[in-house]
Length: 216
Image (cartoon, rainbow, N blue to C red):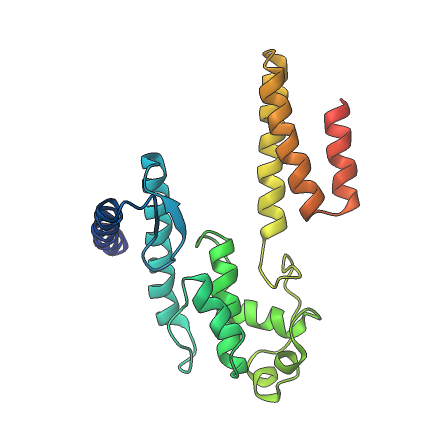
């Protein structure tokens, strides 16, 4: 119950901030506004997006509060925007860079289920994609013994491929349903999205899987 009460307080705070930003944008004649804390840009003309973006900001603030409880004593506040991530990652401190990578990975997970900071840091120390200055740092090697983290990708974010694959499988089901209903134009549009994501993101093995699904 305590957690629910905290989330409700955060939610009220976020709704107030969103409304203030929307009013300011309207007064200035602007169509786009940045979400508080995460600084994601979205159109104020798309009212249907507001609940979703507000909820994401609330989840980000809850993740920040949870991180304060479990983070090492030296860790700064969890970054919530891409500007903050990149500033930490590109800074001189290897320790702070780990927090930047963790924040970016959490954002990619929509501030939901994700390995702990410790597990993510150990995974970074074991990854060949981590900058050498970080993965060879003697102090970090002692604090975060290298250990492979399944699901960690080349961008050092966790679980992106699995989430994208799940999304694509859902889109494939939509494509099949619309084709069955005779909505061929809509189905072709969905298929083009799936193929575009696949070309950009996935390996040849997944491309073969998609081709097989579409040929059935």
